[in-house]
Image 1 (spheres, rainbow, N blue to C red):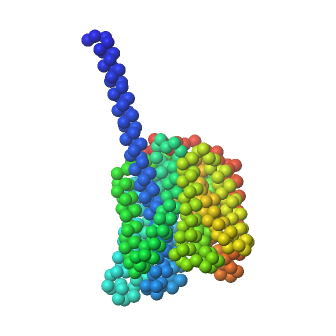
Image 2: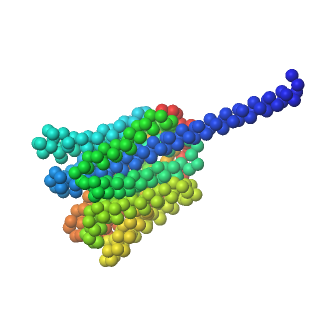
Image 3: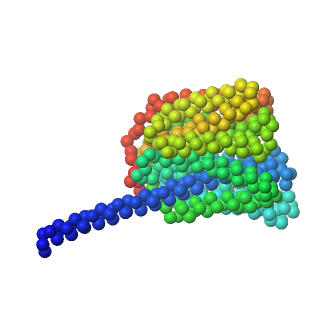
Length: 435
């Protein structure tokens, strides 16, 4: 064979091999986009299950005669079920299939939402006044699914290979909780206003679309696992009791309180101080708060490692402290409302940001670290709003905000400690095993 022809054939073969490698890489990148989209659908659905009962409770009061204390029971049941899921997965997450866990989470969510919508329509339930008791098990199911989602989607996102910025990807994924909350508030509120509260079942069934999308995507997308350090319980105990981990637990504990206290009471503040009705308060208060939170998380998701997360956490927690004081001490209603909304922006990174710095510090510790932090965040998100509610009942909402400023202040101190101790230990995330 002529030398020139052989050289040409060899060059052509190398070119074809290079094209095949590039095509394979592109296919891989596209397939991991499905993984990210699956996590987005899951966390947006988490926002739905966390908000839907509260948004519809006024409708439930009008239609079924529910009382305010029953909303408190719903909230309590939601918290216990979510916390139970967190605790169970803390002990088992690194032994379970990520895919099966994620699929179980979104499947339970779809079942819970469907039961919430359909059980009250059963003749036996309606005729015997059992609507409230029919809703409770549905709430338990989708709240448990929300706890599972909270634990599993962070390690799945963190284990996506070839990401330009893992911290940015985590922040961007968590931004869809805020955007999901905005969508839930706007769509549900407008549905109730324009279609009618008596048709609430249909909007709940509509929200089942999100977990169904999650089921489809988690069934087909590639999923990697985070590596787990050797040493078993002793290694976990050493990590758990390390100064950095303790500071991170305190940071996310107070981050959950900082975010939820303001988010929960901004609607009440809008009603009492500005005279807005419930629907307007939801849109102006909770809606704008969630929008600002979404902007903060999306912004960091886009900029990624070009911003220093530790500095962002320090600035965000201190600004939240100042804004809490403004809401509590400034007697001008519109100024206080602006401070409430701005707090959504500055508190927006506190929760996902703590997860980011923890994943950098312990890249080979497995998913249980995220589960522990989820427990701490959930407890803070429950305890601090409850305490603020008792304070508000006794001395007023403004004083409650002023006293609650101690929560973001503690978060600020915790983040100062984290910034001094944020030296990563050896470990790699890319190349994790397949599930």
